[in-house]
Amino acid sequence: MGDGDVEVRREDQLKINEFGRLNAKLHEKRADRDALQKTIEELDDATTELAMSDGEHVKLMLGGEAFIDVSEEYATEHCEAMQAKFQADMDRHTADIEAIEARQKVLKSALYGRFGSSINLEEK
Image (tube, rainbow, N blue to C red):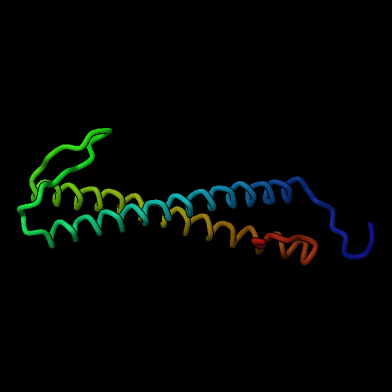
């Protein structure tokens, strides 16, 4: 081994593997959170449109593969309930992301402390 070369021990490899798994999970959680955010915004837009209507227009909701005629009040309540559900899901994803990032920070510190610049754990 040359200067600066550090032997990769089993526990080091386990940390590297854990970091990699967490990184993949992090990307998945972020993508899911972004999709949930888009859905929440769409539901918010639908709720706003319903609130701005005068109540005389036909309200159609997509129920599976068919549109159904519903009252403005029902459609509004449904949109708000779905928004709350998706917001709770998004909050869970955000908490998961924060936990993953915290664990990755610990792993980065340990791995950079052991390998220095010989290892790259940063996003490209």
